[in-house]
Length: 269
Ligand code: ADP
Image 1 (spheres, rainbow, N blue to C red):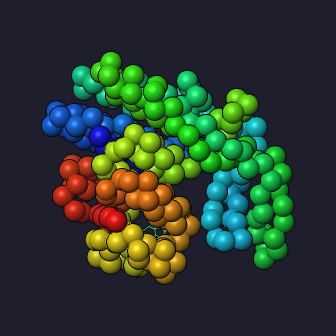
Image 2: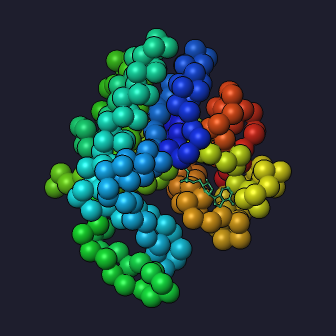
């Protein structure tokens, strides 16, 4: 079992990801695909005159502030266009893909974090009304019954609270908890960078292997912004029993095969 997370940043082509998922299935793998949609969400928000609002926590993590209108746009981008385009692409390759968000069938249930501390212009303040949170449980019965019936699940945020409220959750961390819950051997996180780099402007500075014990140090020294969250997700997956997490470049041909052969950054216990 393998979980593949395809990012939603600029430059990611889902056609190539679909080719790779099809190739994996032909090799007898049983992948679950999790995807993002952040770039499209930003484009759609701007087109609709509702500019994206990113906030930074005191510990330096950046996230999207999600008010109800943003949640609507987020759903259009993730569950609407991106999820259905990927399902269409897989169906065209003969794979019986099924697209679900975390609210469908209570796939991903978690807690909402309505009030958050953010740093703006050097000052810390509290922002309320944020429809975000963190996945705490995965409906493995649902995923197992889909897999047993021959479907390939294509999953995306939002998740939901136990009261049924949709919450924006980080896709990398949702993929990590899914990999753990499904006892996957590997989690492949595809993004728009060659891997974790010491200098983000120098692809040759890619770190090819990281041991779990060095992960926090490497994150503190080299990762900025969203890469910090990917490394947190990687740590959670390894701690949850996943044998290997690979962070690799989605923009390359044969991106998943290359990732599995060691291109990118491989994280192990
Ligand atoms: P995705 O949408 O593909 O999940 P994110 O935007 O969440 O991707 O995270 C990937 C981004 O992390 C890269 O585009 C890059 O700008 C940023 N980043 C920060 N620090 C690093 C680093 N040390 N190595 C690689 N990327 C980094």
